[in-house]
Amino acid sequence: MKKCSNPEHPHCTFWVLPGETVCAANHAQATTAPSSYDLLTALRSARSESSATALPHAPAHDAVTESASNPLPVHAPAPAAALPLPPTTPPAYQPVQAHLHISGFDPRAAGGRQTLKMELRGMSAACAPQLTLRLRSDLIPRGAVQHDFVRTTRGDWRPVFVEFSSRNKEHGQYQIDVEVHSHIAGAVAQKWVCTFVILVPRRDATLTEIHQIFLSTHKNVRVMADDASIARVTGGDGCNLDVTARNAGIAHVDLSAPQGKIDMGFTTIAWDEELIEVDLPAASHCHPHPSQAACLVNAAPEAGEQRQIRLFALEECMLGRFELVDPEADVLLSHFSPDGQDNNGLTRRLSGRHAIIRRSQQGFEIEDVSRYGMLLDGVWPGKHKPVALRLGMRIELSASIKGIVVLSVTAILAHGVILHRIDHGARAECFYLLLPDTQPAPASHQATPQAGCLPVLFHRNGGFWHLDTASGKETALAPATALDKLSGFARHNRFASEPYPECWIIRTEGAALCDSSMQTA
Image 1: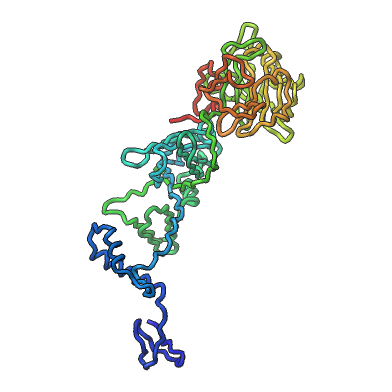
Image 2: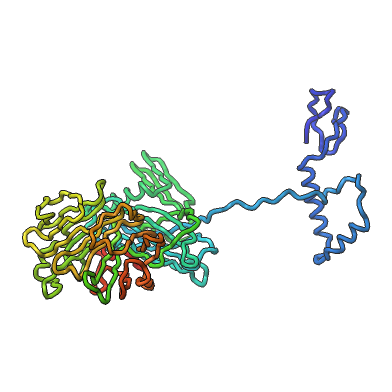
């Protein structure tokens, strides 16, 4: 309905029904062109009538023939059913509201083993049938772990269990970074990320304190009843509740559950983390063999060549004593006598964590963190006092007994350093200490002739690469790569995915980040 629209009676307040030509006061109403709403209403009604009377399998050529035999005049207006449809726009992109359901966490088990159950929910059916889950945290053994989400025949996803321990960890909050990858033809096609926080309480914390701390960060409903008042909650599907009643107050919780007893326990805690899909670059070069520690093995080394070239891609690289079970260092060093390698004897005078090499503002630096000391060019720098590395620097481990391990800085690169042994182990090994995901700059390399003949290697996209300085071609290093066809490599070389392939090193959750490559469940 609308009010009277007669221009001669602007103060008329009578309402006019649709289709009426005069109002209740006999004022003539002006005829207006049909609105878009009227045209759409007529179009819908014509469609509904035609669909109700038309045959279910009417041939299309009959309608064409009928329209040709009864053509409409040029000046005649087209019926409402013949009006053109509005242009259809493609639907906007709707991101999949996928989330990770995390359960099984018990903060009361301070200093003990924990197991997290992770379930993938709400993921689109168009993704790959197997997704890769990567977790990074200081709580997880070796700093990172990798698992696979596999789709079942029912269409859901098989849950994944992740174990960790808070033993010898400082109480507080620990961040866990999650990445979910969908691979197509070996490349990452889709990527989802999320981050959640795990609370490690004090060993002497009471159960009430643990619950209060958790609920203060995870609750979305809080009800309090003070001074004889009544607090009541109904429904609450999927809510984390914090209900408190003091001073003769009454608290009532109804979660709309079926008839029967409801156990409100705190054995474990569960919550949901939303997975956020991130955009990937158009050309994503996924490394075929991701690793952060590897080795180049020369089966027949010639004069001046090493049998093993050990590769490490770490922000901080720890040098320490060689251990077969749970080593504390990344670069494992042992004493070499004229008779060969000796993992006992003088090797025991090296600390498990002897020295750290890291990047600094001036380039790279080394810091002594050992019990037995370290000599740099014959001088002890002092414990916990970083010293900048320079080309040709002589590093002796340790300071009390000379000749256990002697290293020399043979190259300082823009993305790492190269160390050669100058003791009886000179023919056995040398070390590449590279920064992860850092491109090389060959023009700024400082190297001795001993390191100048080595290939240019770098780390990117989780794996090691070879750079041909003449052509600029980059080649991913993997066990199947033919190294003899790359510049700088001698014959009989192969790529090993472990830094010490000649030894069977046992690493448990207490070991250092030496083999920091992702472990697949």
